[in-house]
Amino acid sequence: MQLQRRNRILRQSPAIRAMVAETIIKPADFIVPLFIDEGENIKTEIASMPGYYRMSIDLTVKEVKLLWDMGIRCVLLFIKCKDELKDNTGKEAWNKNGLMQRSIKAIKNAVPEIAVMTDVALDPFSSYGHDGIVKDEEILNDETVEALVKMSISHAEAGCDFVAPSDMMDGRIGAIRTGLEEAGYTKTGIMSYSAKYASCFYGPFRDALDSAPGFGDKKTYQMDFANRTEAIKETLMDVEEGADIVMVKPAMAYLDIIREVKNVVDVPVSAYQVSGEYAMIKAAAKMGWLHEEKAILESLTSIKRAGADLIATYFAKDAIRMLS
Image 1: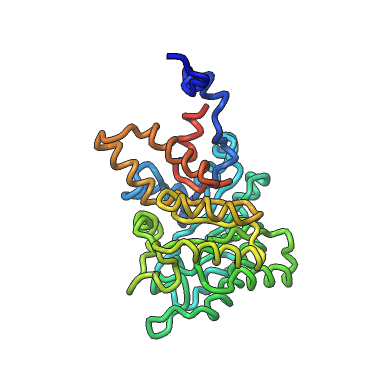
Image 2: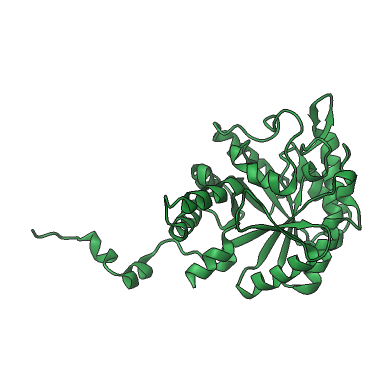
């Protein structure tokens, strides 16, 4: 059989496949989520996220140093607030001596060059476990946005590089941008969770921070997973309001949304491979149903191939070890 073109020629060896690979993953692509707890020398494995831990500030700093040496250039911080500090105002979120603020300072003092992003949402601080202020079981939008602005300014004051609003309240990006400008934090960026879906894949994360909603669900502010056009609308509005980076969350079940967003914006696009996605791969690998390392690399490659410039993932360290 004579053929003018044989496509398999470009697949015949690892060297050739590497030469023509269209999607390349590198350490600087990753954003590493870190869960931080009070105390010293605390390292608690998250039961639903085997191999991932919630750590005290001292151990978190050591982890960040290791991440930097591995080539990772960005971390995303989440804190576990003590129950006695939670209320319906979220005021602990902008406490100058709060766990988040102390964590930012410690990390930036230890590794000044690393980009520190901070979660901006009220659910870790809420006695109701919701991302906003509650009245008669309704999540109040405008009052919540006012709290998020205070929270963002507090994080900027502590030294973060980016605030990352994950709440999905209307108008919060514009309000945060205005608040940062007026407070003089003109170098602080915003990574907006622009298309954050009301997903079942967040369960292990809520275990990590004890932030599950105390009533109802989050469907009045997080997006309906059936919708695509709405994601584009939300994202374009966030860019117009001042977002420097936009995010799609979750990632693996929303690869089409990542591509749609990438096609319409002129800012970097990030995607969050969330806790449930991590847990699924871990559980299936434990049962011997798939090869863990291959599943990690294939899933991360699919996210970047879909259009993500940055990937928040709990697999970052594993992926870098495999790639090297």
